[in-house]
Image (tube, rainbow over all chains, first blue to last red; front, top):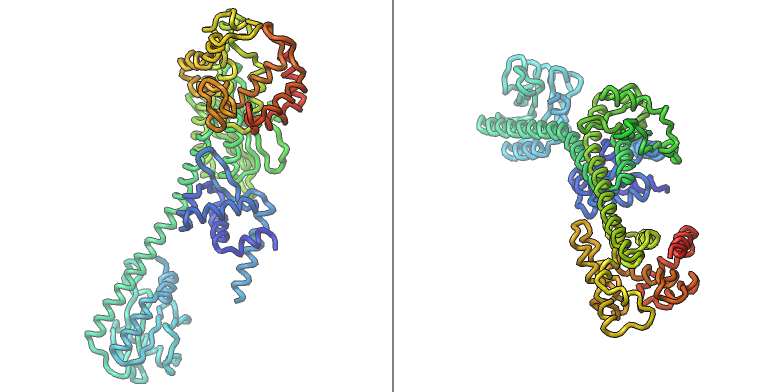
Length: 94
Length: 490
């Protein structure tokens, strides 16, 4: 299973991916994202960093904060859409 | 609130189900609840699933229509069951959008029970409407709050560096991120030449894109923005001016990831980013200018000391370069590197308090003479510490003769007690003394001999971490060239 499919299997990672998919222009800190998604900041940080490693998110690192943002890699974006479309179809046929 | 949304909420409302259970318990009946409206002729929604065997029959519907027509709350159906209707109004409409019917009662329903139910239903409906209103407000406010949070995060990210070489690519990356574009060029105006030149360039389709490769001829949009002090917006190109009293530069973004054209909202967003960027750029430029002024003052002080006795109270630039290379290898911060640079040039300034005959004495020093020599780091720190910008360099100067094993001077500090910068300078100072010939000393060592000595003293005189970084660097050709320049100078 590739990294994107694996990430989408995790409910928290999926929640984060869907947030950035809905707000692709957002650049936000751990604090901001944990507020929008109602997550504890420690958990948000862990999953955000894992998504950065998977190249699904980009980390803009500064001296005092890190801004997390959605990938701009067109191939990854396309694959996320494909997986999410597939999930929707699976759900519809349930 | 839309009709369908309200209907959906009613059907999913747990309090409505509870209300039905309570009402059935009170009346001892097994009532059937369902919702129907004028425009819902073909869509009768039951709540919960119907148990009345007559419900789908035409006569039942005709009775309901009559009930609505007569605007009555209570009626009997064709099968002699009692029906109660509750109108549901959307917002402030005069006619009910649909009705909640409660039927299948065999006995008459007490009026008090109906009134209680009516009140409860009103409360549930109000609750749903309030929740929906709040949801709508939240959905309107949330994207704006996220945008505001993005502006705040971008501000923090670009305000956290004063290094222009780091700042400009960072701004370009953030502009691409926020605008979801593929290409960004940041250009700045040369205040003297009054020309505009590209300073940062990122192209997502070309990872090897270099700002140096952008021809000035390709900056036609930038020149237009510079001349007109206005935003340029045309399909897939958006270029905004960076304004600080006058236009000091531009940010140009190109080609949205989606292939769409840039719109006016994006024009406003890039303008806001440009306003933030110009403040950060100005701060970085001022910081660079401040650094140049301080370095110039320190160089002037060193030049004055060199007039008195050349290369005795100061160290040559080559030495400073070696110190900085070790600092870079050990990944020191910008502030630490600056302190290291200042300390490396003037670490022996305090020797000016020592008589020349002691400094130049080729034979062994007496105990008193050596005590005087040992005071020079303190004297250097006193001289340099009078300059505010040199304050971070003071501990490095003060402790550059400490040894890793604690046998050094002036305080006999050991290991981590000695500032890392001082440990770096200590090694570089000893290496320079070994490889460079001095008038009061015998022949100098070769680089290889000096390296062997440094290795031998790792863990005693020198910090093994610094030795490791130095040994890696000394093999590099550019470091060898710096050492050769130092040797020739001496």
